[in-house]
Length: 294
Image (tube, rainbow, N blue to C red; front, side):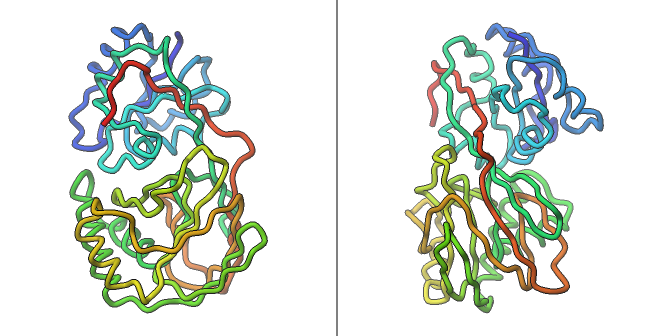
């Protein structure tokens, strides 16, 4: 099997070496060409012939690989090395990456991963996790401006989200989901493809990243106290968010920060329309069939 290993050496704690990954893949019968996600020419490597692209990194590395992959009919495998690993976990992938690499890929299972598109003043770009605005986008943008990485980044993002949510003012929004209008004041709103986004927050636990649907979730002011309580222990159950599923969504961006995965477009000088949808063809993610997942 011809494979390309795209590796972010700084993902998570930065303690998984390229040599260990290559050796583990070789044990599993995969001969991989190595490429660092930090290298400026990594898009050229993703254009080379391959049967599989192995992405060893966090959510940002997965999105980077998908964005630059010229032939998206090539399946990818995800070895989760990041702090959040929202994409991998939404696909049920939560195992030791070295164990996964060693397992071999001849009997691998296939899982679908939808790819979202977000169109606005920046043009059109893909996303995998979510597009959102409100306090989560504000907190994520504030953390992005600081030189913080790894688990500390997730911890800080949750702290800032809690602090901002306590004082945030709702904004009136009108969303259109598959032609149906939803007018509501929100403290945050996320159009989700995966179940979790940001600092490992499962905001759309019912979302399935390969079902061909997006999940709009939003927080109303009346649920602020309940949401603050949930943020203290996010594993305690589903968040107090309203939800609506659909294949496409649109809204007007008037003010504040907005995120497209971990990108933060410049706030608009005037209100502008944002359209969110899915590419017609999903990615194939392969998962070794003989690994126990958490």
